[in-house]
Image 1 (cartoon, rainbow, N blue to C red):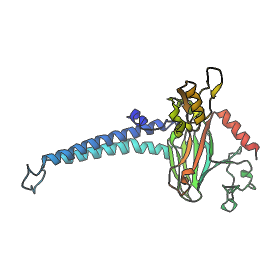
Image 2: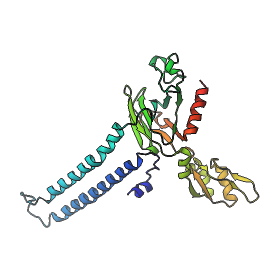
Image 3: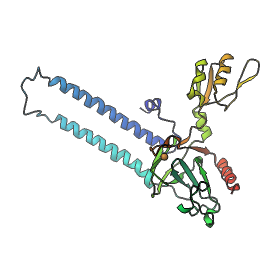
Image 4: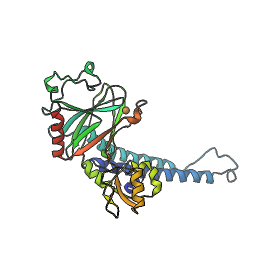
Length: 317
Ligand SMILES: [Cu+2]
């Protein structure tokens, strides 16, 4: 079932809790398939069995056997097992078994129309004071730089950097309306609600570079692809040179219409491509007219890269 779900578009999983969640999704789909086929067949059977030509007289007593009641009970028991045996423990782990603050990285994410503000506590590990009165275009979090804890705080807009294989706790909230913080590749989706701080946690298990590597695929191209916008959102994953040694397309360059023309004319019809930014933060709640552009990026880095990034950000303060 997981393979079927993948072929239907279930994205790659890059989080530690993802496999258990995907397994649950597969089990639920199996149950739904069995119910659909079972009740559908039962319905078709009753239409045939109790047709008018066979039953000219209405029967006011109805069914005397208890098979349908037993079936109902069976389905209810199965659903109870799914809920109590699988779903509740899975959910309990997400909401109760938070990693300790010492082993995890804790950050704040504040949604607004239409951006994600990310707040890192800085070297002291303490979030500085924020105040709604200080919110401005250059200070979207309303961070009070006078507060000693706020001096080293780092904030970014729409760019979430995280280290790989370290649990991250995100304290999520919103400044205006309800948004939904969704990281599809990390199997995270949580509503951001104004006035409430909702914690969530997960552990990324792949760096963005590894995810790009894993999602690299071969595609066949033709001149028709000069107007293929899906392909043009991708980048090349290898260097392509013509027979005379001229560069046709370089690794990490976008697959422009011009590049497609050059490649096809040079006889190259198969290239490897990948999405340059596979890990996105999507807003999964229709939150206003600009909802479509409420998109951020997640970059999962090695511990060293993440440290270097934090230091670079701190150097701008
Ligand atoms: Cu939103």
